[in-house]
Length: 181
Image 1 (tube, rainbow, N blue to C red):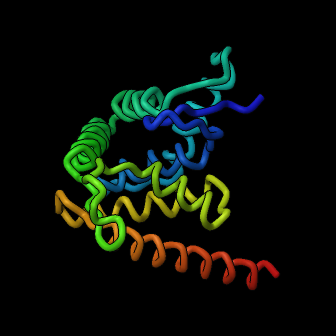
Image 2: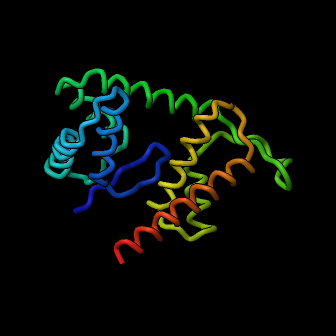
């Protein structure tokens, strides 16, 4: 039985234990308390709980986020839980405040709200990438785009960021293949 995660954009993906480890580690790193061992143990608790208590095999990303916060708070990492919450809220605010403007042949299109899922869908359709790879690239693009701190981002810049992140990820994959052999 594989648990499915319902993302905030309503897409559904497989639950990945490693993403939960990463969330814990990133939360603790936000307050300079990175602890991979603790992150692994905390993620193990969530994974165990989900597989033992989740009868419909679905969980929302918000529910996982709340579980992460609860475990951090209950284990003495209150400041990491608060930092994670603040990071999450700031990212949501930046997403809502950012719009995509169009240049070139699409210039007559109206501005659109920022949606990471548009990048994911485009990568899957135009480049034939699998959803997890497309989401990883889109997440890196989103992180860079939102860090710019501008409320109107041009579609041409998004295309450049996507191309750059795609190239970097493909190169990393090729290097990994060479090492693994």
